[in-house]
Length: 373
Image (tube, rainbow, N blue to C red; front, side, top):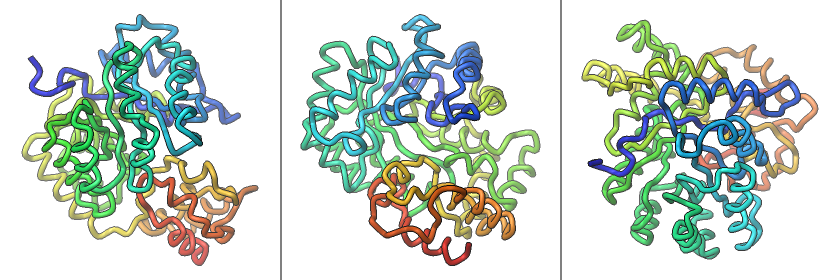
């Protein structure tokens, strides 16, 4: 018998948000098929997509690479309903479920999430009666389990879980870099979810890929402890070692990342005491950094009136802030703004900040980038 809901689920989940792309910008389906086959062959089962990922192409890729090629009972598939991005009214929001079913051909979803609840939008899910909607669809068999993903503060999470105690799980951004970050409140959100007895799906364990190549001070700590372990393995195993975790989503973009993740997650072992001590040292080392904590989700760019490539600009600035690579930062910035908006083109409309799951002060960061670049 499980001690908590989802305990027996394999601890590595395949996040379909950052799938490999062709030169045209379209998802590389053949490459994705190979990654899906590797994942399934290793005994992993959890796949995660969303209505808004890649304008629906992520869900279509799930159909082509997974649903059309494997028995339905051999995997679990999760997707999400976004009531604040591309959903002008209640009817449009509810229609997303049926569109997702059509795109994926999945017949039902094992896990269905109300997507990216945060301070400025969580009441929309109430106003659109979406909590009742997902429960109704579960009764009809279109959803097996339902919950929500969350990007806000512990008090809001407590309020949501108190109002909806029948939510079966919560998806949270957890990683060692954000554990005590006051802007993300990872530890506090984790503790609130567990206080309410909720199992947790982890998103952004590698923080948009940045923890796969952490600052040199962190690299030195991990190399001293285990020279053979990849930097990503530290991040993923850290959160997978927490109590109450259903699975840890890794947004893998190529076969090499899949191979690395499977090498330590196929037969997952929690961090031991020596490894936990190394993580604490890494957290202390990262505490003094002033990087822009962007995870490159690109929610901010969808409605930018100036078409500013915000995540790419922030990545260029982080090369300077974290690595001291001033010239490389300038070069990356020049490439990022080719044929699109620049940091100084920002008109401070605030659209990006409303969409940002990290609650970043994007306008202020763009002002800084404009002054530097």
